[in-house]
Length: 162
Image 1 (cartoon, rainbow, N blue to C red):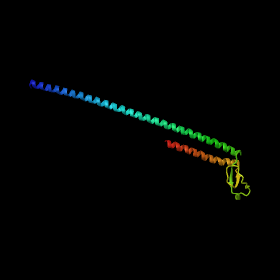
Image 2: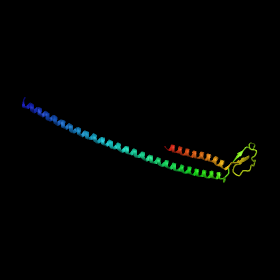
Image 3: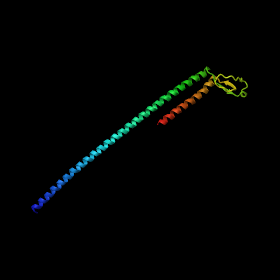
């Protein structure tokens, strides 16, 4: 083969190599831009996720604060109601206070039909006083119902906050 053919092939190889190298540099720049773009995307995603997590924690803390305040409020109300009920039950059991009920005069002929009442009850008719222990037991049942109502109200408010 001739020398010019070899030189032509060599020149072609050099041009091809130079083109290949230039193309490689261009691809490297393109890869670097894509890597930078991807890194920026990941940083933005991480910042967004951190903000969402912080917002969720703040929201949870606020909700916990509201629930704690509700719990304290209802606990104080329930404690006050229980204390008042226990005091009245003790007073009824010791006969410090008396509890009377209206009765049908014909059902109990041995009970006097004294219509004089000493309270706000303006209903006419015969009255009978309950035994102190029975009065305390009766009020204890009513007090337990009141306490259940207070607990149910507290539970409903708690559930509504969730």
